[in-house]
Image (cartoon, rainbow, N blue to C red; front, side):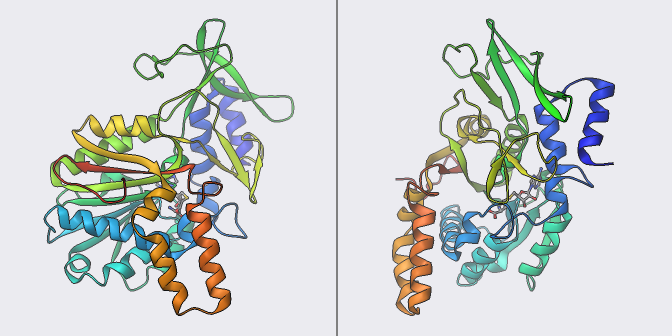
Length: 355
Ligand code: SAH
């Protein structure tokens, strides 16, 4: 059976499936899910992420985490956690910087939350020599120490529900069978959207997306930081304020494709609603920094100076690589503007980068 057939047989028995359930299966089905079966990153994969563009990204994030760790009293033992670590490149680059701060590297217990067995083995290889523990979910990460967390392009991969406003009411989008494949259909909205919708009047055809799983994960993370200390840094593409808009997209081989085509073979994501994430963290008493555009954040932390430094000792070819990477990470036409950075920190400490 293919994943599409599995989904069709669900639908045949239970009727249209929530878009969020479809997304969860397409990405995470234990046997056929997109992330379960491949390493999607890199030139030969489907998409490229900031840590894969340049080591400078992880270096800046390491500087941020170490600064916050110091500001929070440099706890002797703590958890250094990453959600959705991909190839492990970001964590490797961070740990390389951390080696320069002996108390930090000595006290860091590295925990990775990763569902994909394929990517776990890539991470194992990338992080050889470090003591690392893996988890399928945040729940099993130990709860006895401060927790410093980074998450790059993690929340965009969590499922969203989609609602469409029509004839004066909200309908939830479901996935149903069409003659040849799958199609989106309107089913009567059953979820109470009170308190979740943006504060503006919807027009006919407006789409609203709600990432319940993201809100739950952020709430849980914030509760842990509240109880034991720490901080979190979230980087992703998305919007600072909740709004209407259809942002669910699928990418395969670096080009966009239909979200219902090539089931389990394309990367389906949605833009992150940072306001909802912030609200979930504020609900636990957290202080929110940003979100600010990634370009601004990285420049505030000194990425331009770092690029110069790297170029000093480099060959011409390497210099132009560094230049290109700097542009890709910070330029408004590349990852500099759409990608945003949000810090989640207990009330009492500050953070760099958000000016
Ligand atoms: N942070 C990495 C990879 C981003 S891709 C980078 O920047 O390069 C998304 C990552 O999240 C992958 O590692 C994927 O396997 C993981 N992932 C997706 N859904 C997940 C879930 N529900 N729980 C844990 N990890 C998940």
